Image 1 (cartoon, rainbow, N blue to C red):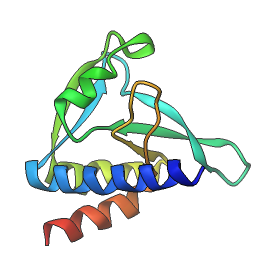
Image 2: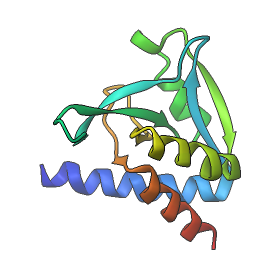
Image 3: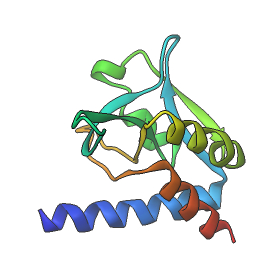
Image 4: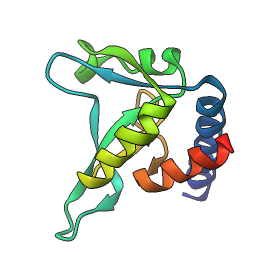
Length: 125
């Protein structure tokens, strides 16, 4: 379990650095929805798992996850200012967690959107 925690933290830091450098965040979308999963770490006040909206630091990492339930999804790029100002705020209001650089097994770091927003702003400063 400790190794997974360390790996997730390292992956999170790599995500922050890559996104701050490129100025882009990637997600998967189809005609009806964005790529959603279920949190393994965050629950609402009633104990229900919170939804996770998935983002990647590169188009290639996102494309790898266009399989199974997301086979009909397309990679969508989001400019970092829009992501910070709109997406993070909307996720916070809707109680949605950010899933970052998930792999094909849907393993990856999960962060509250306000924490993600603060860390991205700090990386840009």
